[in-house]
Length: 291
Image 1 (cartoon, rainbow, N blue to C red):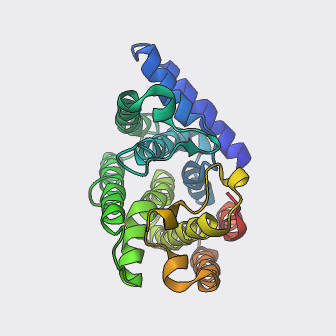
Image 2 (image 1 turned 180 degrees about the horizontal axis):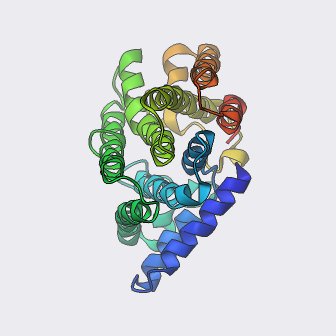
């Protein structure tokens, strides 16, 4: 993961440097959050899914960068005073605390827009079939937008101080966190030329991984180490957010993570033509991650 994350970081800088027209202060704000560290889970999953089908990491790398830009934009906006009002992200001051609220909003806007330009450019350079390229970009829009991640964030906000059922909580997490993770895996598979059955297996893997990732996030907000997480713990409870530990308890939440990861691994472990070593390692890492 560290090796792949490093390649993604280098490539993202290349994409920003290719655009000298970007105002320097805006580029600084974009770079500040892009280079703030983190697991780079989504782009790493994209690269791992592509390689699991024998695809080229070189062709997949720009797509992975676009996915991380979409993710980073969402974090910048999520931290804003009008949203979660967070002062720290990954152990550093959040973007609006450094550059001000207006520039933070614009940096997020710029990263999101840039990401779609990179998806289109990467599709051309990878010589993807036109229908596959258009389907990939269309899916990015849906899963990152109102039908997916953004819609999930709205549901999350609306659920604060409300009684939420387990089914409703799953739907929030499927959209808010799971959709971009699912897209990351599916995009890697599409770039590699996955068959329908391979794409189905990888999608099932990603859906379970996304939910397990979010449940683990909820757990860490209760029992995590502030120094490892890079932000204060207990913020979910303070904001009266709907979480798995609040709804079903810590012990059962941990069991859900293990069960979901086991199901995810089984789905790709038996599918012909998928060589899932890296994807299985990532799944195992998510069970016990501490940040």
